[in-house]
Length: 447
Image (cartoon, rainbow, N blue to C red; front, side, top):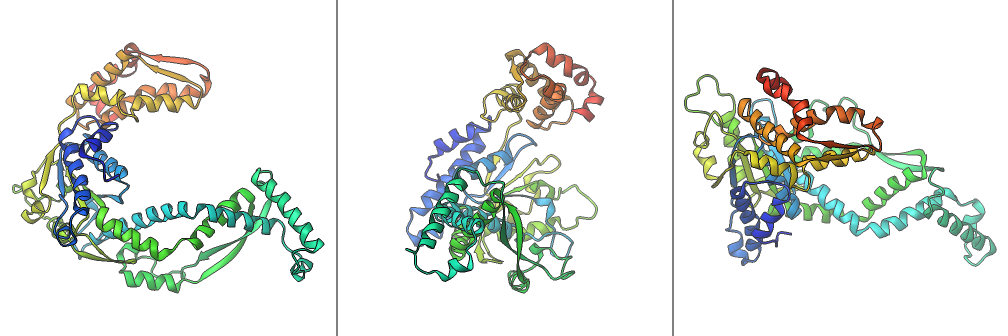
């Protein structure tokens, strides 16, 4: 998917995100540059650094959504973190190295899921055989009879094939079987106050080896046993070293980290009073973003070519209030625009996951048909825009609160409205929302 052209990437983002053309173009170029880098000779390839970005704009205009959709397009390990959860070394909180460790864990799960699909056919075959062994346990006579052509062996084979047909048809799903489940028990009370992300890689590996693995037998239904046995067979078939190698390589060359609320780390020049750890977190972020080697439980991981996308509203400060060194490591700056009334109207109708389409689908599960008339959608966009102007501007998130308030009564009564068709027009929207929208003080607490 990284071979998509910038135009194709922007077109794919347009299906879910309205407006913000400049941010989409910058993101598309950053992804395309990764493909271009892979085409270079080895010596020059290592010198090309990713174009880390700083997205500047108010809340609810699409900063997070652009990064999230971008990662799903290219099937890259993607981690979203809040800058405010990290603290300077020496204070209570997570250290910034845990960003890389969390990203590696995500990549491990991603690669493992892909490898499960590779071994799926063999794992399903083994699972079926294991279920048949549980359903038809061999007798002592069967174990002593080694001749596959004997009458006993032939009878057992015919019986096993009958059970196989029934198993595949789902006729045995409710029958109980015994399955062995491997569990690891941690030493009681041992290092319970220390989180895994606060241990170094060697300590984590030592604790894993220290924890004894025990096998417990459980009686479960066949349909549940199938899932348990399938997971066990996949774990046996998957090459764990290959998974680790592929995951680390994917993180190093395709990983994307989205750091939200970066403006909360900035120190305005006019600010006075204590400034606990803001500057320290910025200093700790510098080597991670520029490129360093972080130790993880799976081995060292280089961040030289991980793409970092930072974002912040910067209401009470400006990007220049960040440390100059950190500004230099986020060279691409993109300002996102406030959403207009027309943007709200498009958000309600155009994206594949538009809020109106979601409500139609949700209530459709109750057998209720919902129709949003054009004048109702226009009225919703107008109200959301006016509320953002008169109260706090929370961008497109205002549409969620408006829609939920509008649909509250219908959603509550939906089980009793099965088979009915409800048409929502502008008059119904005004009836449900106009009183709250006119009362600014009340709308601050409800919408």
